[in-house]
Every structure is written in structure tokens, then in C-alpha cells.
Image (tube, rainbow, N blue to C red; front, side, top):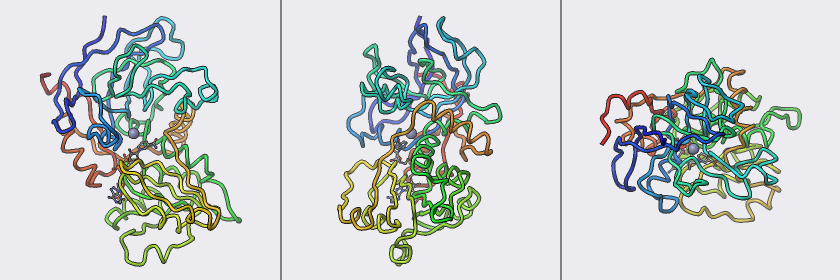
Length: 358
Ligand code: NAP
Ligand code: ZN
């Protein structure tokens, strides 16, 4: 029997959220049923809902930063039991057999992974995300949430955490260069950026935050940054040319990429995770001079997501959050876009109990 649960749904890109009911599939033998306790609001949810990445498949429930408790398991499930504290991120399935899946890079599955929402599931239905009371997921796409982490602070790690951890690791943020710590700049201090700062600092990098203003300076220093620079300062690009070994670009909007590439050292790397709706022009000259690297990064595999969660637990890190009720989701979207949230809005899903389903 399918499971009926309350969920926050949009019926169109310009429609408000409404609390309604959706159906989760009858768990298959290798599925886990999760009672969702917290769901983070990622800017990708907003790009999707607002049709900024193309037409979304409405009616739609988004959310891919999910934390909760296992409430049932299919008969073949070996990794999980009822009561386990778990999380689900941006993927809920993949082929499991291609080179990428076998290398624990399910995000790059050659058959295409199944996204947590707005994606075609293996049964042909459109997947529905985590702004809901429960989710049913293949057991391979579930991670363990460390005991010491509150669900609300853990949920954003499932996307913002792994999306920043993977490129910081891949590009050696914690390694020394010329006998000193790497100089890592985190560009944009939102949900992803604030995890990037904490993770890079914990890895041993010297971290600078590049933000539009100094408004978030105190918070940034508390997260582990050594300093904050305002990118809107008249002399910003001139004064900081050639300073950074690695720039983690988390910006969700248009920026002058060429000018930011000039902030890199020779052989420096800009790892891009922010995905603004419009194409961003880049001059090859900005890369060729100084042998620079412009690299993309797409979330991370499931094993690396677990590694990141354990790394956060070991270093006492988690997301800094603003907990909201289901009624506040529309207002939270506007605040995220305005860059006002410190630093992730997270839906307390127990507040579904306060609202009758339409
Ligand atoms: P967010 O919380 O809104 O943070 C984005 C930050 O970008 C803001 O805090 C702001 O930083 C800066 N920003 C926003 N508008 C700007 C503008 N017009 N000019 C300059 N800077 C601006 O978003 P998020 O959830 O961290 O997501 C960031 C981006 O990453 C989104 O595009 C999202 O879709 C993408 N994403 C990608 C992946 C992946 O796998 N690659 C995964 C998740 C998310 P300041 O206020 O500090 O200036
Ligand atoms: Zn996300």
C-alpha cells in the first residue's frame, strides 16, 4: 500500500506553497522508509521551483537536504534498521553497475542518477522531495547521521556539506603549498559558502570569505575564516590579484568570472559549485595566463557524503541554521534570494501537524 504523507507542494512556479498530501511508494525489498524530521532549503530548490533551470514538473515537492529516522525497512535491507538516524541528499537511485557507480561516484552515473525531486524515477513517476513527513528511498542512498548532531543542523550537510567538501578535498584545500597552508577563498557566504568556510578551515586551509559586503564578517570569523573581503570595494580586484590558491565559487547569480580568475595564483583553481541560471562568459586568456584551472563540481558520491558527515562530527561542525515552520517556506525563499539567511533555513517537519492538508 502506498503511504500518504503531508508535503509542501507548488502547483506552478508563481504559486504559493500549500500543504497537501502526496503518496510515497509501497517500500520495495531494498527500500527504507524515513520519518523526516528536518529539511533544508537549498538555493537549487528555488532555481528549480522558479523555473530558472528550465520547466519544472508541477505539481512538485522539492527538498534534498533530508534528515530523519528510519521507520520501516524492506525485507532485503541489510544496512539499516528501524530507529536509525539517517539522511538523504540529492540522489535516490543510480544504475549501480557503471564505472562511475562502481567508483562511488553515483552523482556521475553514466545512466543518469535519479534526483531526489523533479526527476524520472525507475517506475516512470516524478520523484518528490523532502519537504514532507516521510520519504521512501533505496537503501544505497541513505547516510548515517552522527548521534551528536541535531537533525536540523545535519540536514543541510546532505547537500551544502557534501557539495563543498568534495571539491575542497579534490583540490587539496588541506594540503601545504610552498611550505604554507593553502589560501582558500570562499566566494559567497550562503548555505554552501558557510559550510565551505567551516570545512576548509577544519582541513587546515587559511580561509578568506569573499562577500558582497562586510555585513556577515563576525559570523564568518566565527565559522573559522581569517578575514572577510567585500567584493564591492572599489579596489577589491586590484588589491587581491594573485592571492588565492583555490577559490570555491558558490555564487547563485551572474558574476564577472574573468575578474575573479585574476585573484588566483599561478596554477590556482576555481572550483565552481554555484549554478546561476544564465551562461557565464569566460575568456580563455584568463586561464592560459598563469596555467589556471576552472573546474566544476557536482555534489559528491554517497560514500564521500558519509565521510563528510563523519568528518563534521569529528570536528564538531554542522550547519548554522534558522529553523522555520512549514508556513514560512515562501518567506524563506525570498530571504534566501536576498542573501539574508544565516545561513540555512531548515523546515521543522513536525510543524506539518499544525496545518490541515488542502
Ligand atoms: P545561497 O544560500 O543563496 O548562497 C548564495 C550566495 O551567493 C549568497 O549568500 C550571496 O553571498 C551570493 N550571491 C547571491 N546573489 C548574488 C549576486 N547577485 N551577486 C553576487 N553574489 C551573490 O545559495 P546556496 O544554497 O548556497 O547555493 C548556491 C548555488 O550553488 C546555487 O546556484 C545552487 O543551485 C548551487 N548548488 C550547486 C550544487 C552542486 O552540486 N554544484 C549543489 C547545491 C547547490 P554573499 O551574501 O556573501 O554576497
Ligand atoms: Zn542543494
